[in-house]
Length: 214
Ligand code: DC
Image (tube, rainbow, N blue to C red; front, side, top):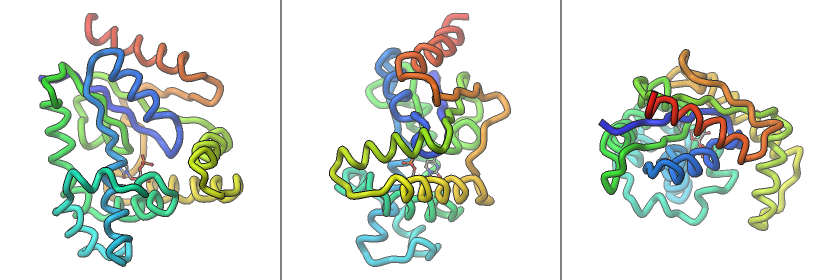
């Protein structure tokens, strides 16, 4: 059985950076589960669909292909909001569940472990993961990070709009009935507001090492 590190948390808390660094350090495979929901959102918007149309969104999720994961607009703000909407549809979540569980139990290239990040990894996808992290940071710190990312990509955005979008998306993700964003009871909370990436990775790596060789 592969060793699983489950990382959850709100928008731009630093999950992806942390997950990638942990995967590289321990030779584990990495899955950004948000990209699956983004791929559904992106494909649906491209086909002129409405993200709250449950039947249409479910059909897209059921027929998702690997190539959809490299859609050029995958990281755009509009796609993030659409992803958050389709993620509240139970049939969409059901269609993406098996792929995530298989990745965790049989990571690609026979990697000895897997790091998955998202919103429901520790609560629903991998409830038995030996290491669960719930990564947070203040709204302002997260908005600032996301704003810089978008600016670096040349997107013309206002910090106030980024903050408002982030709050809207978090509220949507945390209030949905199916697999809402919340820490698993046995998750370690990691607040990255005042931590640089090296310090966050060091803290998380210590937890992983302790479970790998107690
Ligand atoms: O991590 P991200 O911001 O790229 O995710 C985009 C959206 O997908 C997010 O707002 C909620 C949804 N999501 C989810 O519901 N469950 C996951 N495991 C990952 C993402």
